[in-house]
Image (cartoon, rainbow, N blue to C red; front, side, top):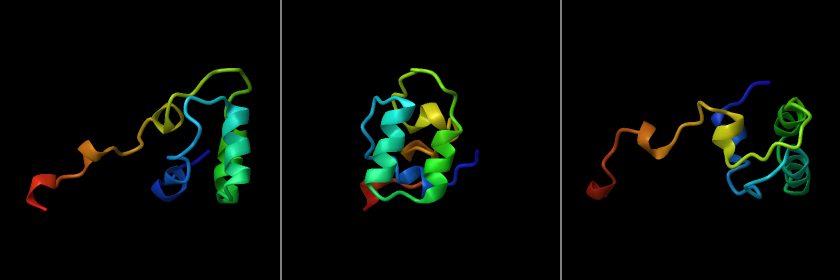
Length: 73
């Protein structure tokens, strides 16, 4: 399983919190890239609830990772 920023952002508007099956269903219905669906299918088969993309990809960058001052703009 590999994630890129482009792939992960396709799940930002997902139905959080969600199970693996909920996320796969969302990805299919919203027309996400095939790679997103394949990555989701590789998650462990359990009924674990995922609260956000960070639960799936812990290295997902947040606003804190970018070095700009929003007040300047």
